[in-house]
Length: 215
Ligand code: DGP
Ligand code: NA
Ligand code: NA
Image (tube, rainbow, N blue to C red; front, side, top):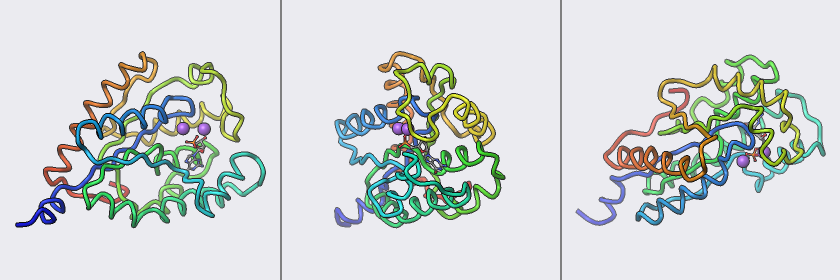
């Protein structure tokens, strides 16, 4: 029984933070990674869209209104951006690294469904991606989010559209999601997330199997 065998046995957790724009996901994701590392858990911060790839640059151009794309086309590009990271994601998890992911397939469906695309059509290209072990939803009303220091000016950062996204998240969300009130003081949000995430990491270490979307 070698150290390597041992390592293989305890996989990392796939933790996804979701929420509206300005819900505080990004800063909570970095705080979580520091927290886990401080507790001896190997962890990495990931985000989707990953704008560093070729596909990611097309997405970035669309979001900054530098390019125009059909709603279905951009939907499939966001999905392709997750698929191009899938095998690395699986390797990381299987070799014991926990991934804290800022948005994933759930945003993929919620944002496109908010444009009126059929939800089943939106879900289809995500089938076979790794399912999150934990989806933590940072809950904030679109109105409150829009008051938080203003939006950055990207394509989706408008109150009317964010209201529709909030509605799609409501349709998509299921009992397994952990909903955290994002209007609490930042330290309270952080504390709640730490507890939920640490539980999830422990479950995965104990051998909870990886599963695929949409489960
Ligand atoms: P962010 O870098 O997390 O601020 O995301 C950029 C914007 O893109 C944000 O408004 C959320 C949106 N978004 C994230 N993932 C997807 C996706 O898969 N599909 C669509 N349509 N929008 C997404
Ligand atoms: Na944004
Ligand atoms: Na963000």
